[in-house]
Image 1 (cartoon, rainbow, N blue to C red):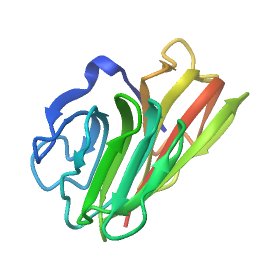
Image 2 (cartoon, rainbow, N blue to C red):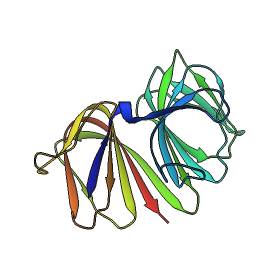
Image 3 (cartoon, rainbow, N blue to C red):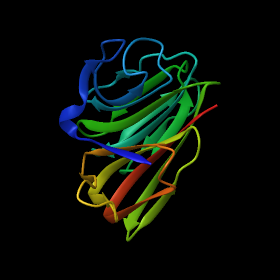
Length: 194
């Protein structure tokens, strides 16, 4: 697989659609224009308020840092994301209200176009090597919450990511698998074309 390092400095800062906050776009396809097939970003949430609507998209929100984030989705009881790595999935057209528990929070946000792209987000500790196999139509985003990760046995050009950075793995038709090694906590987002 082809591996690209996306450092914090590469993220594109932009306002939410509804103007209620800001997000730092890590990656998306296509790279520009609307509509997109998928988009990964990190939201900075410092006050109570509604989320922007993204009708036709599936959404997964993962707490990265902060004391906690309370979410109320439509008429369901509130859900508390109280520690790093906790997540909640919901439809982009849902009415979502958020409330930071005690000060600002940062949250990973993955949006995928329903019917065109499927997503699966996992929180995993990294202790030793982890193998990701190349699959047709499947991309991976590996966001480092803490510690560090690097390609193993990839030579001098091996990608290395520290906390806050992301590795983007895409099929290249040549490399059957990618081995990641290091120590820390990772957020793995599997993005598959339908």
